[in-house]
Length: 60
Image (cartoon, rainbow, N blue to C red):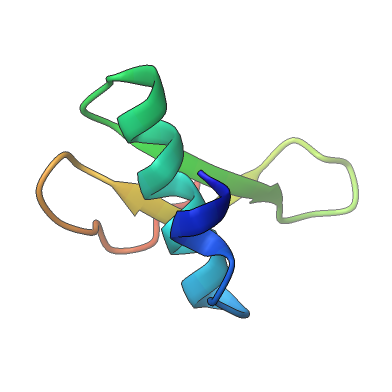
């Protein structure tokens, strides 16, 4: 996992980390989210790997 993300920065780091995590855990989908409001009831995706491509950002 470290090798896959060591050279990346910013959003590319998030993407590299999420894809590496999906590979390590052998899962099709993986995403990284952050709280998007002060009450921490909503999240926004920073990186969402769908098994063969990147998803558009989502908010939940």
